[in-house]
Length: 405
Image 1 (spheres, helix red, strand yellow):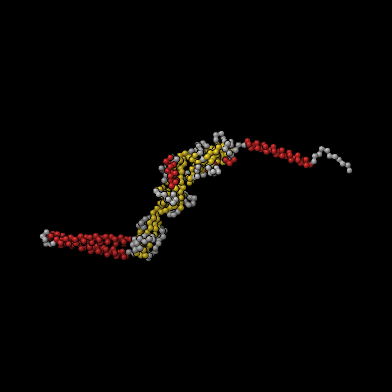
Image 2 (image 1 turned 90 degrees about the vertical axis):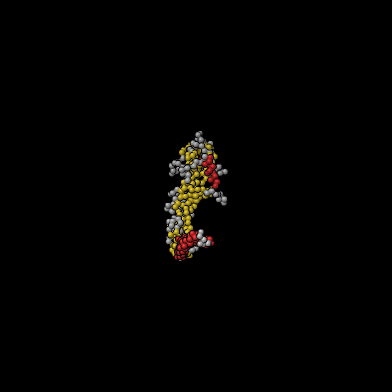
């Protein structure tokens, strides 16, 4: 068969190599244009402009409730309990009868003392008359001086006996009244430790019952002595201004996330620091008309420290930390470039940081988009808006002091 020679026809591998090279050239051109476009793109960041504003600083302290008044009921005479006159767990008033102790032996003692007093009072007039007659005839020497002295002594003795039996009557009457065990204060009474027919003794160590006054109620909280010294220093240097009208008002937080509806009043700060904990006690008086607060409950008290007249607040997501733990923020200067600022933080106020130093009025702090820029980068700024919240006045409740540098 005749053989034909192929002219101007490339092998298949050569054509495939040319196609791949063309594709790589096209892709390379596309990447170059993309990099150039990326270099020309200006990143966008969300910023907040910080301005000084007055805020009220508060401290949240743990504590427990205790009764305003506590009275342990104990008998003051020996005897048998005839009747318990109250319902356990009920409210009682001062003077209400709680227990009746058998009064029979004390009634007998009272009647006997009264009879002895009457006898002493009946003898006194005749003895006194005899002494007066002896005095009249003493000048005539109708009686001796010794007889007159004996008559005078008999009068004094009779008068003393009358006084003795008067006090005996009073003591017997007091013991008779002690058979009626009454409430010394108004409040809520707990369970009874004795029943009808029980034998009780005077001033026994075990209380018959306990009455607690729950309205108002005490809240005792503890605060570090170091915090007290810091607060006094801030007030003296002018960093804090005391709110004289509302300084003693305290808000109470219950164990659940709810807040107690009535405000308490700071009554006093203890004058002694516990050496084992380095803290002291603050006592707060809280109205408790519905008896919602019971003795021994764990609560938190929001105590007011004072007012910072020119405070700088920054959203917490706008502050980061260096590897050493130092707080820093990125700001945008007048030329639109990013700068890094070292901050000193005081504490958290709601979802924001209270900045002690490092910022000035008018600084624009980057809150969103800071992870894609570096110091010196030119950026485009847009206002930062809290999701689901309006840009209003910051929360007034301050959290415990944060670590600052």
